[in-house]
Length: 228
Ligand code: NI
Ligand code: MN
View 1 (cartoon, rainbow, N blue to C red):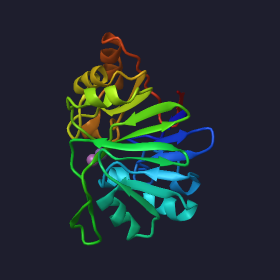
View 2 (view 1 turned 30 degrees about the vertical axis):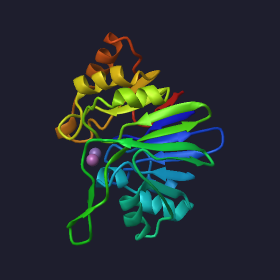
View 3 (view 1 turned 30 degrees about the horizontal axis):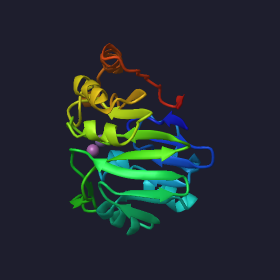
């Protein structure tokens, strides 16, 4: 499994046979190095309805024919915009042609402004466990720290975990490092930081805390890949 960090909370996951994109916030992200028009993938997984996670999902899905996987309410919202969707919900897993996806809890909000600017409810936010090629990637979505991460780490052997560290909207570096102790992944990656001033934290602060706790951390640059 190869993971490429596309900035903010977006990752391209390449398995032996498929390409899966998570939270493709590209055209709205000044730091993005990939444009939505050049994305090729089989599936788009969206953790929650905030615009910095839905991003270019609908455009990518329509152009490539990729299925959008999201919680039921968000899937319905995106389906109404023309995407082909596969609705799921928290605690549920499904075997897709590319691997298994299970949605986990995340403590956050989830809503998306409609054309009038009014926030539409898009269901509970989620994290994602993606298992393919005998590797498991946990993408925590946007969330605060929660003790049930211990259970998530017990139920699945996590090879790599991507955790939000930017503070303000999600965990900060110290809480995210504590999350690593709960999850016990083979490797931890920071995400959801540096995109804007309000979430400008030092990813090395996170990496040092993770390593001090006895776990591995990597800080991929935007566009950089990590082989799992
Ligand atoms: Ni969010
Ligand atoms: Mn966010």
